[in-house]
Amino acid sequence: MKRILLLTLTISAMIACTEKKAADPVADAMQKVDSLFIDRYAPIDTMFAEPGGAVLIMKGDSVLFDKGYGYSDLARRYKIDGNTFFNIASCSKQFSAVAILKLAEEGKLDIHKSIYDVSPLVIPYLPKKKAPFSDITPAHLMSHASGIPDTRPRTDRNFMLTCTDMQSIEYMKDLKELNFTPGTEYQYINPTFQLLYLFIEKLTGKGFDEWMKENIFTPARMLSTLYFSVENEPKIPNMAHGYIFEDGNETASVDSDKPAGAVSAQAEKKVDDGTPHNKFQECDYGEETFFATKADGGIYTSTHEFAEWIKAMRDNKIIPARAKEEAWSYINNVSGSKFSTYQNRDNTFYGYGWFLEQQPGYPKKVYHTGDNGGFQIYEGFFPEADLTVLVFENRNDKDRWDMVQKIDRILKEAGLMEPVADK
Image (cartoon, rainbow, N blue to C red; front, side, top):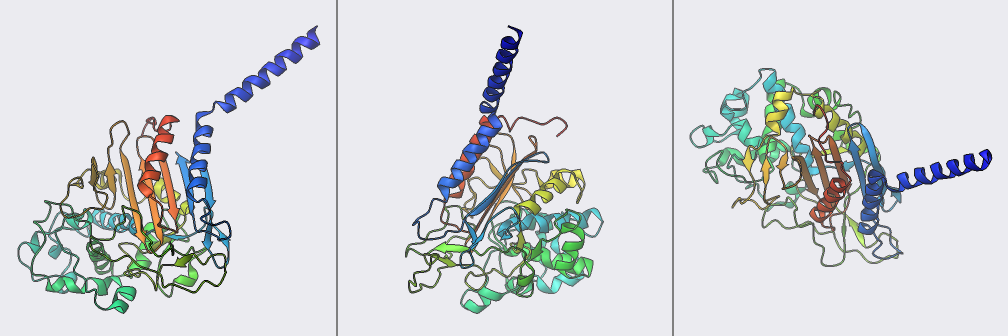
């Protein structure tokens, strides 16, 4: 009888344990996330290999989900994983902003004073000093509130394909007017972050790449992260190529950061040679315009290394908490802007290098997106919940924001957005 009772109790415990595992809301949420991305990258044609993406979800320092889908290089059939390096495009902006905030903490500049006060060395690159240009501050540059128009020349395709940060801002010294009074509106443009490139080099006396590696990437333990250049391309580990789907009617995600009226890059049509990757065409440096600039969108990194960046920012390892909180504050109202459609949704703001979102029923989100060639990037962090979501894709034919909303709902339903103590 005792043996039967013991066996019964053991079986009951096993059943209870199994039921507990089955009812684990976090495990269930991760299964839902996996299903979401399996469906997202379902083969267009089973004969053809596809690009895809790397997905990482982290709660605190615990990685809950870390998986790759598809191929980083279709010709070589290299599979994507958490160590695949993507061009993160405009998610690079936060690194430039943090660099400026770090220099401000060191007393090298005041982000709330005129850009003409940064250093005499920057003045030759700026318009003649007078209002309203003299009213622009580094804070305006970092929050897309400067009013500076993006009128870079677009008649020379070779220039657009190869120009550097310094070449990209040459047009600014000839500007005659702004689009609006600095600090009064939101207009998302890339060249204002290329001015930050200039500031960093002139204030530090070092090359931009060198200073960023020593003072930003290395302290954040992003040891292999680097900026794209023709010289650096061979140094990029596990490098993904960006791809667009060549179906004659390629369209990018609806929230692409290309300015209104910009022509999307189109891959050159190729003769069908029967290879399994022929429906996708490479679209990165050499095919996409303004790919070679750094401060606004030139970083190559992986989800694994970017997770280290999230932790470094969370733990105030690069800049102190007060500077971080200013960067993550609701500085510029994105919602309803008549100058820019990018991320222009309800309850959306811009800080210094990050978007901020406060949707009803959800905690504050600090996030950014990136689009360059075939790359489509999303990074979201919920500070109160210490919850991170990273989706790095090397294709841009899938709806990003629909995906983001679905992930947010899954994580909220699993209880992962509840506030964490001491956060």
